[in-house]
Length: 355
Ligand SMILES: *Cc1c(COP(=O)(O)O)cnc(C)c1O
Image (cartoon, rainbow, N blue to C red; front, side, top):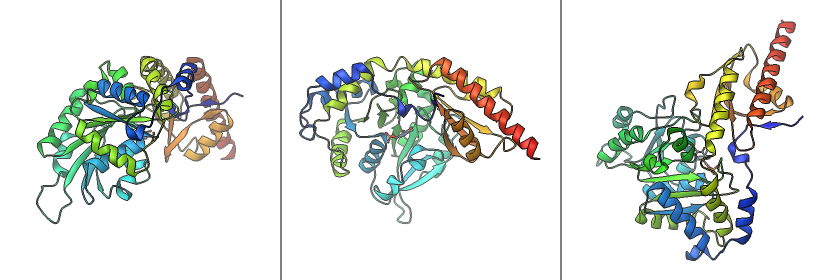
């Protein structure tokens, strides 16, 4: 049985066009700023995000870390949502390497944080007892909040509170193009009110490697030094940038297909007794649902899905995550739903027989 891999859009493979572009890429030493393909990608990224400049990074994690290093000093406080990727999934880099303290505020079901919650936690400057709040991190789309999206207005409301207090705003836009496609706005509109924004090439855009950190010229120049310090100064990295340029030309519009498949998947899952989710809350390519304990404990359910040929990831407790991407067709979605439904029936039957 062919496994259907719904673990992540990071499993997407480079296209033939990307491989050809990589083979033919013009390259140079990027640490000296002399890789023409990197320079072209950085210009393109900056333009797409409406920022002055951009810097090629090895990963989204590196972009977020370097943004934190660039904006903050050791002992500063950084505010983010309690479901933030930077808090959950980046190995504690903000604390370990940037030396900042993270202050969490609630996320709503789309991954937004409320301007009022933010206003309450920003620390006044000039008190030697307090770590100064210097950065707020937002995330769009929001990974752990089912690929939730924030509109330009949502972002502006939060950014205005931060900026009024002299606090910078970093947007982790690993999947910003998914948000742009879902909301039918240019990505630059989603980044307009933040100081800097990062996005990933290596997720649904199907590139093998890469992320871009975009912001004002001066910020990017400082970030370049931090990137070197953490080992991200790559040399003939234009072979990677070449794939990125193809991705920006060919991979953005098709994200709508992933979203349609995710919707189909979410609606199908909602019809399976024992699984809980609200399909209306999942506007992009990430579907997160809860499995009843009466069906199985989370880890047991995941093992059974794997045996039935459905690969998923596990955010914790009774939650299961499925992500649609370029290698998942609508037929695959239907087949995955049939398999999941069979697994749920099987587990329920086994429970009944056992009790
Ligand atoms: C994947 C992801 C990252 C990190 O990207 P890597 O390239 O895997 O390091 C950061 N933020 C969010 C929201 C992500 O989904």
